[in-house]
Image 1: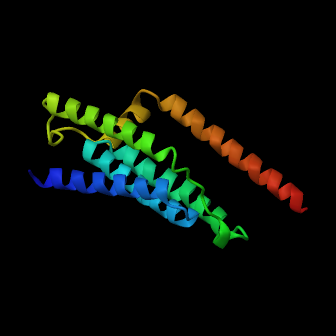
Image 2: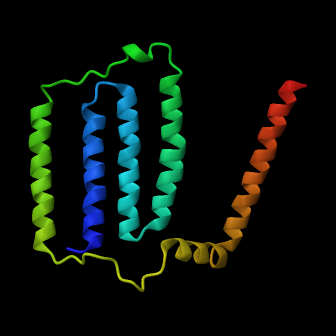
Image 3: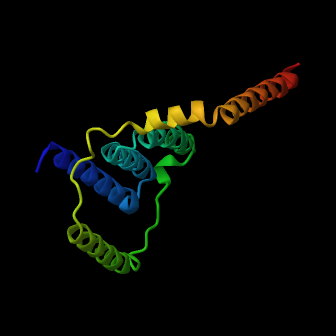
Length: 165
């Protein structure tokens, strides 16, 4: 095993353990923070797969935006100490069986095929490919969407300012 494999197993362990905490935690704040570690582990797996653009979007959009908004919403509620998530123990045993069967299926597929343990060194960055494609083939659409977003921003500022006058 090389360093790439150890890093993969580290991110996989982080993702699985924090996802288990999200599902089993009765405290909503602990579940939200564990969700942050789950999303971070998934973005680390994306980096190892060579999909660096998706990893950055995962961090910016999900961890930086949605999860922080969720945490602010949870922390700003009045009854934060009394919030408990109710989980049924009746559903735990069937879900454990389904998860075990799914895991066994994945392991049999993984060891049945020959997978490369590391991405090739000469593979270009997905961000570089996406940037070149946006600025060569789809430059007109890219510029039109930029102008549309600018018009929407000016309109939103105008509407917000009109209410203050």
